[in-house]
Image 1 (tube, rainbow, N blue to C red):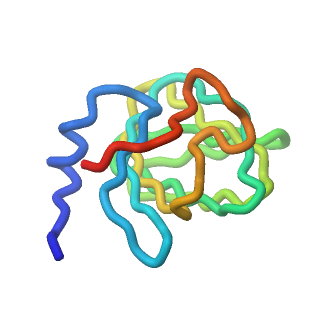
Image 2 (spheres, helix red, strand yellow):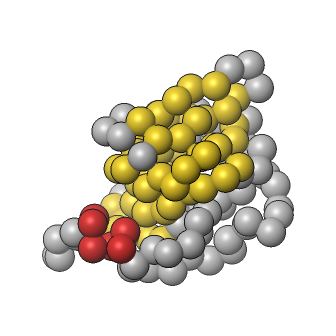
Length: 119
């Protein structure tokens, strides 16, 4: 059992769209990531995802609407829902999702991470 200092872990992240595993529980992973720019449109057929904003803000785009997520807010994207995070400025995000979740879901692109680093 170790406590996690989120600020210290975020300091170690200097790139974008590359989630790091900060913790695991009950088959779920807690990931830290920084976003900047546009991600790819994708969906996760079998997993819900939670995006919790630690610093900054970003837009979660859906095919029919866009929702702005600001510091101290989170959004849960239900499985099977096509979405795309967009961050005009850098934002720090905590993800909570099943360990089986691939960051680009049903899409394979240059942003796909097949294995994640632990921090």
